[in-house]
Image (cartoon, rainbow, N blue to C red; front, side, top):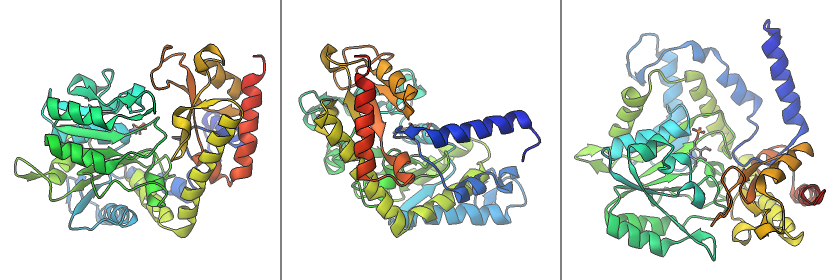
Length: 397
Ligand SMILES: Cc1ncc(COP(=O)(O)O)c(C=O)c1O
């Protein structure tokens, strides 16, 4: 028990809340006790500015070992050769990881191509409100509004005409596979680096339930707290043989993280990431990753069957977008989110492709299966969840 009763009470209350609700936020998960133990360990007391064997403080015997193990586990999990790939495990979270790649690879004001929020991208893929959209110029990747999939043909035309220096693919609200091979061809056609932000689907890649981007990308970033089920943190993978002005991009990215952007790494976080990577490198986790996708597919199928419009007609991954507004025939996303929360189902309102309402009260909601799959839920449970969602959304309609 903690001495600080006020905070202890809040921790207990949050624990109860997490236990009670059905959590359908696709970017959340429940990390294991071992991960949380490592996160809250005495490694958090240690300053370790620099990298293994090149630190600015003494006393690094165990931090050096820890960070090296974490890097090795990261490469092993994604089947990457040590002489070809480098893993930086120091980013404090996904946003600074992405920013570090921009800093390393693109001069200020340079063009970066990415999915805007309206296409399912993340703020750090060049959105104006993010530093990535203020310092660099974003060329948006649009969707084909018929299929609600990435419009690769237009993406290619725009890239060849505008010559972005970096292309970022990856998503926060796009339910389908991304064609990494095609993205590589587009990057080659315009001379850009290709970065894949696999934050959302890293756990699925680890478990063989989503295509791996490593064959095609120069850089892969990922958060570790979503489908990968670890602590809040991030990793940047980069190809050692890729260069910018004769310097390896791995070296440039390391420098962009430290001293460019951050000070001392959070060693407790790195310990927890190391534990996460080992947990994910197991047959049990592979099964988990596959179950995540099965559950999301059932949720999409059942909601469609019950009369809700599922964006792009379904999902290939852990997340689905539901058009609850349906051109005025349903209810707005904000209300849907609120009604579901009252019924103990947590999700978030979300824009849909070709959004006609405001982002503060958009047409849809975003749902995901990773957290509830961690709690052991299977297809029949997700069929039940779909029924509960349908009933709740229709009550008072
Ligand atoms: C695709 C993607 N990249 C980056 C991030 C940023 O991660 P963080 O919230 O850890 O900064 C997110 C977070 O939702 C994300 O979905």
